[in-house]
Amino acid sequence: MIYGARRYSVVEKIPNNVCVKRVLERFSEIKNIRYKRDRFDNSTKGYIAGKYRTTYRYYYELNGLPINLYFEEFDDVSASKIYSSSFGMMHHKPAQDLIDKFMLTSDKIEKSIERECGVDLTTSISKKCSKGLIC
Image (cartoon, rainbow, N blue to C red; front, side, top):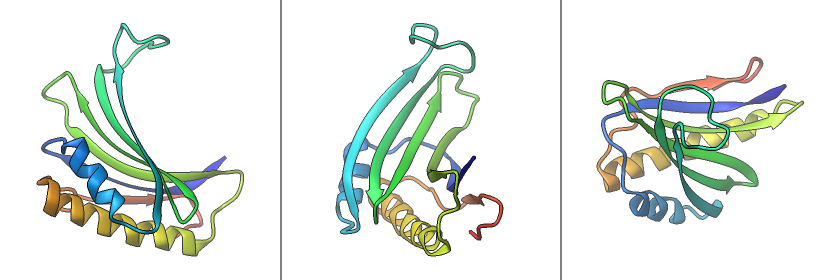
């Protein structure tokens, strides 16, 4: 079983990857930032089904936790664009203080991305934590 936390929302546009990376680099508690653009369609090896989409992924460590922040847009223009930031741990619940740090820092990151990259992340933000954890 995977335990963790997630923050997500629908967004109107995908921010520039250079801008997002620049925001992440300003946080001293964030290390090892990596960016990857993934394309999923019928030409993708191993792709079976689902909506064709492009995912803009930022991997980084926050106080030693591996975080996956991404934006996703679909070829179907009627489908919503998505923002998500999450982490998970296998087989055991993370300490509540890790959840608290993740939530607090994610909120700061989202507000910085809004201000500097011109995309609204927090108006419709949702939070989800595994059973037994408090968001």
